[in-house]
Length: 189
Image 1 (cartoon, rainbow, N blue to C red):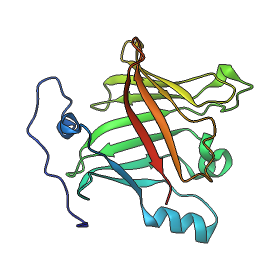
Image 2 (cartoon, rainbow, N blue to C red; image 1 turned 30 degrees about the horizontal axis):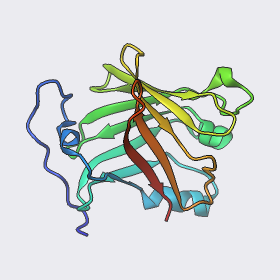
Image 3 (cartoon, one colour; image 1 turned 120 degrees about the vertical axis):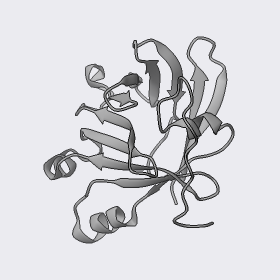
């Protein structure tokens, strides 16, 4: 696998936000999310978590996007994985192409009024959709909605998605038909 290579962006496409043209070509391909080693070392050695940084690569190892988490130190240390954050997704030229905002919310099945919600913008400032957690006592379930908050897709994770397991699969289905579209797999190595 070649390192430090990047995918050359495609020319603009009508109806596709600038910088996201590559995603229209991803079919059965996979995008790999790699966390920066600096973030992992800081957490392990210093005992505190820093803002996460990711490289998003295609299966050939080419960098397609970069993602940078933004929030403050106190929020990271006190709220852990429940923290609020903004993730800025950048193309290979450093141009922001996606912004993801998540407010601080509870993640307990006992408080269904405080479920997780993400707002997705592309280009930044233009809301293109939302990801909303659905209440369920045992399963991680989410609805992906468009900019008008109309449901488009459903995501459902496994009964047991604990971090000690090697892989966690999420089924991705169309909202109205229930037809399985694809699978999202997180691999922990």
